Image (cartoon, rainbow, N blue to C red; front, side):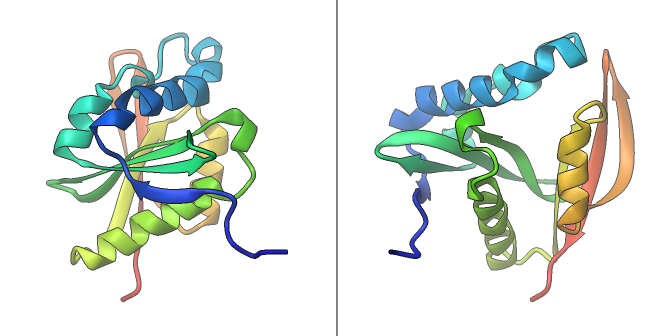
Amino acid sequence: MSSAAPWVLRRADASDAASVAACAIEAFRHYIPRLGLTPIPMTRDYGAAIANAQVWVATQQDEVIAALVLDITDEGFLVDVIAVRPAHQGTGVGRALLELAEREALRQGHDSIYLFTNEKMTENRALYERIGYVEYKRLALAERTRVFLRKPLKK
């Protein structure tokens, strides 16, 4: 029995944009009733994200099962979107992408990484807090409140 992950992590290219969008839609659609609106990751232009940010995918048998969008902002190294198809949640692929994000942040000279989520996505917040992210700010926007969390990284 191999200990290799059942997925492959790689940088996304332009041909992955539609698959990344489909992954995000599938991963976030169940939040629509809870939020009363469409989560932003479902409406992103992933072609533009692939061209202008750092997008990674996890594939299994040539299917995108998870996606990660990383960016650098005035606040630092950002996990902008992490999406895992529901059938693959709980398999460790999301954790593998978050660990990749941390390695990339360190590689690019950052001593922390941050992300934000909707305050009503309580299970996401709990997961992030379990793996070392700490809430540092909330931002009320039209119809939603973003919770910002940061994790210090060890060099």
